[in-house]
Image (cartoon, rainbow, N blue to C red; front, side):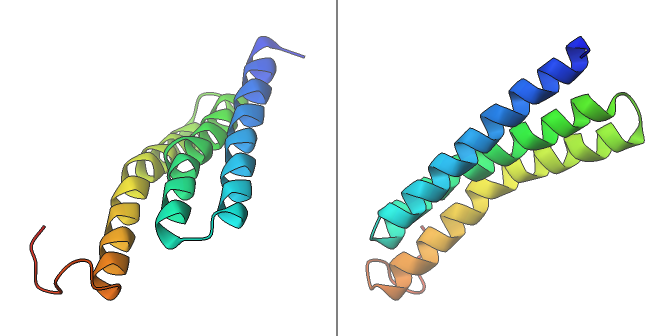
Length: 102
């Protein structure tokens, strides 16, 4: 086992642990707002850690760059998507007006 392989395994275990904890919280939490909070670590940390592990295991090259782009897009796009879903849920529940800008 090389150092790169060990680093990839550590990143993979951490990413999968975050994803499993988020999935468990998703099952346990009853309200949609709590579920959104449970999904945020999965998109902000879990998937990027798994993609980073795959990039480390792949080694330098085009494949690693693709994994890093996926990790960056997920890390940036996940919280934005969570905010949009939370806003839509709040508008549907009547907590925000449909035409309010904030």
